[in-house]
Length: 115
Image (cartoon, rainbow, N blue to C red; front, top):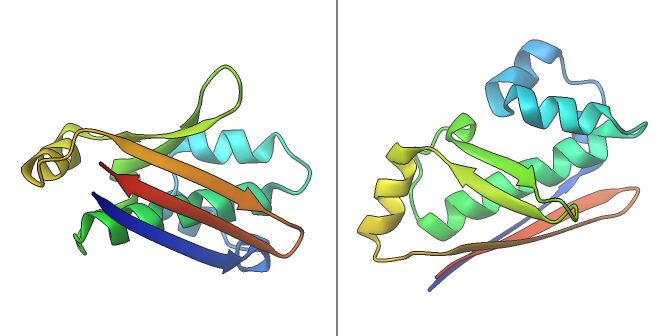
């Protein structure tokens, strides 16, 4: 089992140019965040998930666009990874990825367990 955690200030994503956001987040992640008035909180939380995943996987070269935060029908976030990244995780003899996300007005945080 591996673990990663990240915390960031939400303000970091408030005025980030769209072309920069598209280098970090998928179109679906940006669209999800933009449904909310304070969208930067949701972008920051997704950033934290991606960072926590990279830390847990111990792989430094994972492109953030290969790790997508999605939400189930109850709104619970989960990670969708590309087949290339799935191979990396399976090579670590891991089969499950669990995340937890939290945010306030100022900070967002996420933890990732690769089991």
